[in-house]
Image (cartoon, rainbow, N blue to C red; front, side):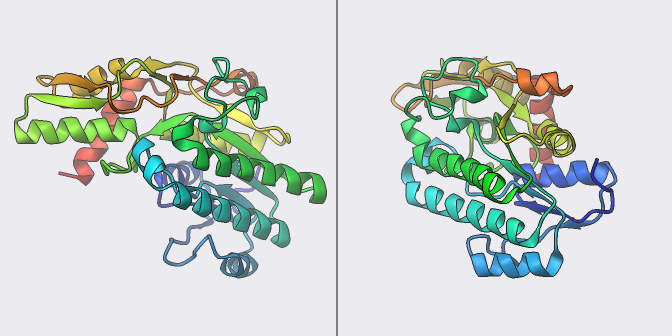
Length: 310
């Protein structure tokens, strides 16, 4: 159990995951949180990150920072995705080692697994086949971040652990249509169609791809749990153990946001990987399971969206 008064750095505190971590930590009584903004600390600058760690001496680090977005952004900005993420992971991990940080938890992504990995995807599937081409640069950076933690652990004895979340959504998500993930994009499309009085909404792909989705506050709860309970070298999956077709997802969102809309699919747009479901048996064996079902999570997310984007 880590001390309630310990200094905790949440890297990426302005993002979807980071903001959820801040909510969860405060809810559980952790008040000594270190939360520099992007403007205050450029995580791609090793000298700046080293100086910040020397000044503030965080005891625990949640490394949730990075450049992340959906299929279109990954396809059109591959250099940005691989550079930013490689640099951010390297600078924070190295600074945590130099400063003697007690423990670091690194957040990866389920896209690290091969496109054709056996489903559900077990931790052992890593590096057993080619990656999904639409997000390969991002996935390679995430794999590098995980291997970085393992290398510092082996060479220097650092207590750095890696977790691999499934697809996420919830308050704080990115709703920009050019860079958002599927749930945020669909919520915004149905919302704008309702406001405009449109009769239909177009959804990318065939609608047959299957995905697993986790409400981000559940992820934050799992990360705090694992910071206390997990210290193995190998990474561990975080997910719900349930999947849904994009077609079914679109219907759920339509029924919450704009029930009268017709859904049309555009098969000329990419589906991405045909299926992505994590094997979460290792996490469940430790005593943790997700609490928020998909429909409830979508309703909470849309309520937040309406407050932020009236």
